[in-house]
Image (cartoon, rainbow, N blue to C red; front, side, top):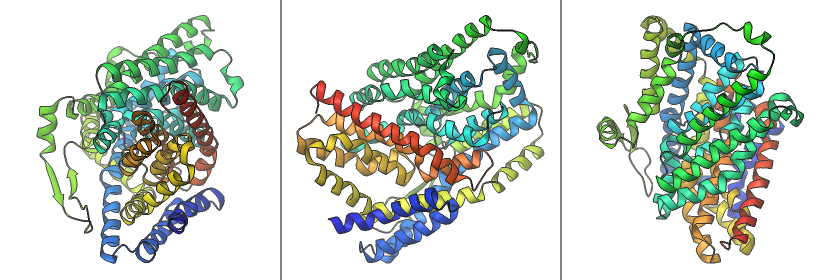
Length: 509
């Protein structure tokens, strides 16, 4: 067991060493990590050569579709809006609410970013808010770190609840009860993260002076609606409702604060009519409408769009499933269509928009290599049994205190795969089995996998690559990872201690 554990750990050690210590470019580090994983899979874990190679190909294809596709679409939305002047108008309108960067971060990275994660996922919540924050004068690396930290807890119910729904399907647990438990487990983090974002924006936690209450309410307004919606409705809407409530409360509080402050800055801001603002926001409004209409909330339309699908075999090993390309229901397609229509509304011509799209595609080729490599690495590790070997060893050695480190298993899954959903597929049943063996509450322990997965999201090489591409600084992955790592460790400490103590107090552990 320990030999398998140590061998399976090598690709992860390499990625941390290459990205965080020697600061190797992410594309190169991930390619080397993939080659190392392939060698280990074939010679140490006895995965047949053809299965290893087809598993690698499947991972690379998954990197392209839907992940890179969605990133291109999200950046295209920002670039078109920037070219048309829409971003400037949105910036002016937000500035009329407040010019305080701390509050703007709460509205854009936390509220709007959480909303984007809830309706689309796949990197949109990092790519779009980061660009807007830079337009407000926030330094690019700082903007990417802020968006990565903000894009943690909303991922549990991202893409219309997909991660939690998948976790329920894998484990056979009630999806409504599991959703409710996860919202309770996430509540403390949701309240803490806005304080971290404000501290980062202002350079220290002294930046909370004057905005403590709006920061607190920005977290509470996200956390409480999630709990009620998960309990009463289910997994599709908690993050959507939480994000909308968060934005509404933060904007109202910002206006109240703005009224009490000096108006000299406000006078310098150009004012726009409601029609101008709606025109400028049209790509984002249409993205929201299209994604909602195509989601499982509207099953008839969802089924019609899902029928436009291409499937073909890729992986040749046991448990192989057909690779699926959902042409119309993919968030990438919906975002592209919304952006083109929004571009027409903003008086842009199709030729110029296609030029912007091509420039966007050319600008992220290094990110595409990084993402395809890391997803392929994750696939090979999963098929070879390397990922399971890591988790099994941790369960074995920790014994009765395993519930304290259970979130780390979920974080490990997200670090490797870049996806909360994939982390739940990998480790959901392992957490269920551990709960049964230890005679603890299965909902609490399985939910801990989901909560841990949200924390691991911020340091996943895939997420780091998206953040670097979003700010136009490919090659800065090592700097971003170093800055976000300390907050990730803090996140882990809070999660592990909080879930263990609360679970013990209420008799679930």
